[in-house]
Length: 241
Image (cartoon, rainbow, N blue to C red):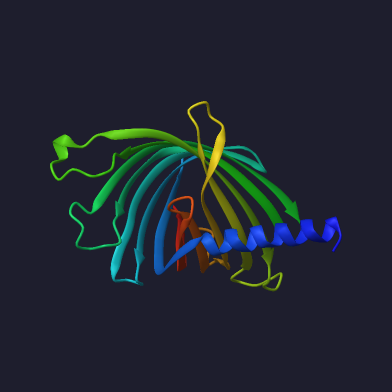
């Protein structure tokens, strides 16, 4: 056995050992959300997002989220957003007391779109500045305190029109992937947090109403060796006033 073969076998054994060392917890969920847009001018608008998320299908609360924001369309293919998020994060164990961990965060985002023939690529980068209740949670709210951290999110979206050109209800196939990374105090991403992948359909019902619905898989780091896999159906309703 030559040295190259030994090296390849050693690397393969290391990878296999590493994969076996990972522990995966699996849940199934349903995510529903409503996005409401209110135009202020040709370039600016207000948006309000409300998200209701469960695990064990509809049986157990996972998260409730409220996210108002301001949007600015700098050009046809570049937009900026910024806003505030309020989150209620529920422990999977319904008997945990207290069960809800609150988070407040302020965020800013830039999105770029590359139009293609009957398709498009777009990407956005979001910075989140998070104030989360410190663990372990205290039963008395006046004893609770918040810690601060930052996170960066990078989303890549591909959309392709699959309906006929003159269809009354245009339908796009959507594929997206989003990576979350925790940032250190100097602002450098240093640790994987989670990854989202979605395959679905974007359906335009009218100039004011559309919805995105599809299957999503989230892989979330709970520790260096423990991951949560959430398989869910995600549906978002977009309404423009």
